[in-house]
Image (cartoon, rainbow, N blue to C red; front, side):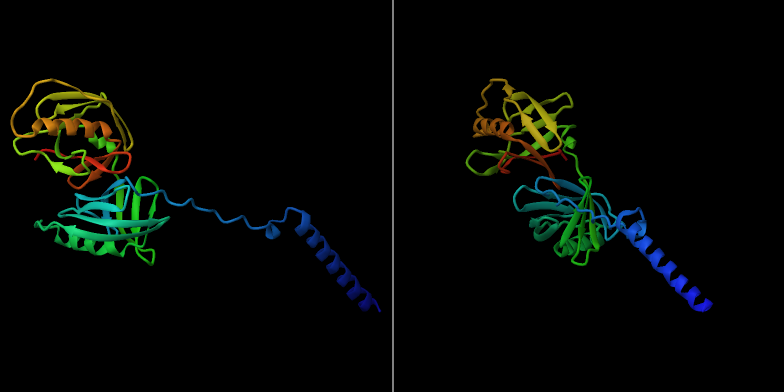
Length: 272
């Protein structure tokens, strides 16, 4: 009988302890029964349109200098392998990214052939990307890193004189600078852009915040140049295009200034 009573007492104690444990789980502070924290969510990646990047890694290995990637606000993109320049198109949906390579220049660059082949093979394999605004990583369909880039700040616009190589003529076309004329633009740190408009010298205030550019109407000298033919019309088109420019895009050949609709207004390159 004593053994039976002892067993019965043990069962009662176990039931009581279980009940107390259940009470703690329902309203106590037991960490074992606390509900799990909700999973963190990640904001959708921002648009790549209008951003420019310099290549940092190829397949996880440090890249040789010169590689670039620039996304226009539409579907167009340009870049450099560190040797040759290329053009193409891209399509972004959230973090998904597809890249199609178009024309590629064909100059020879000793010591860069292996990197160039790897870059041109990797870009079309891109399926997604990750970016914190300062770095950009292109990933394949399995999430493996293909190429790594660092953001190019548009403040690189400031510095030595740029040579203008293309001008929006106001007729939905970008024309090369007339042979025999020189158009330049020097963006100074004091907020002034100046240079030669092809005939007259000019100066205008500007502001640059990130990739966003605003140029005020320019003041220019008033001489008339008869040669080369068409230089005065080119000068008017250049000053108008400069004022319409609202964003800066770094490309392999230099920089492109675009208007609010993403249309190219001016293309600039460093002399030499």
